[in-house]
Image 1 (cartoon, helix red, strand yellow):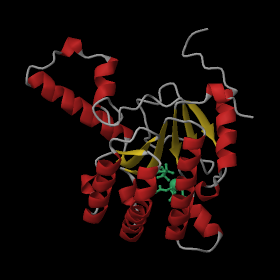
Image 2: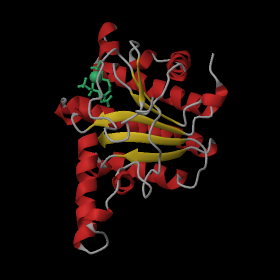
Image 3: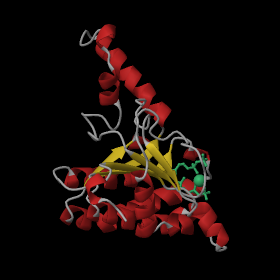
Length: 240
Ligand code: IPE
Ligand code: IPE
Ligand code: MG
């Protein structure tokens, strides 16, 4: 049973296992990605119901460009279709969408429909839904360092003024962008036990929950199980 008083404010999910889900059924990998989009929508709806304030999903990494052109373009096509068909619903449901990652290098139609979504949901005050796209934790930290260096060069900042907050603020989740606190909980599906370059800075003290379920099979029930697991943990943050 979930303790509604102790819900995480921010849940982040590594949605993994679409390819294996398709393979098990003798389907092409893109069928797995399509099923994965549906699971993502259900989990976003359920997050809102549970009163979670921020949901971050890892949809495409800076390393996923290594896949075949057919798979990469297919993933972005699905994403555009998802965003287009759900935009109205996102707006009515008061969901605010952010993209974490440099999405300017995505196909033009994907950039256009993402920008429209960002624009039309920007004043919404409900669930903050962060989609990590062309996202890599190391890329994010590298960009933050570059941006801080520019501020130093232009005299806006000195090196000894740099704090952890200065760095946090410059990340895609930072105050000028998605303005999202560090996740209390990071979930990864499909039985893989690694972070794969996800939220390296923000996840410093996140609780990690690994589920063997492949992402397209990840139901609201599985989601609640992961949150219950989180709630059973004792978070010490280095204290006794
Ligand atoms: C996750 O599923 C989605 C993306 C990385 C885009 P995968 O495509 O990695 O699925 P598996 O790991 O091959 O099963
Ligand atoms: C991580 O999954 C990226 C996403 C879920 C978007 P991958 O399938 O790309 O990660 P690895 O290659 O197994 O580490
Ligand atoms: Mg994978």
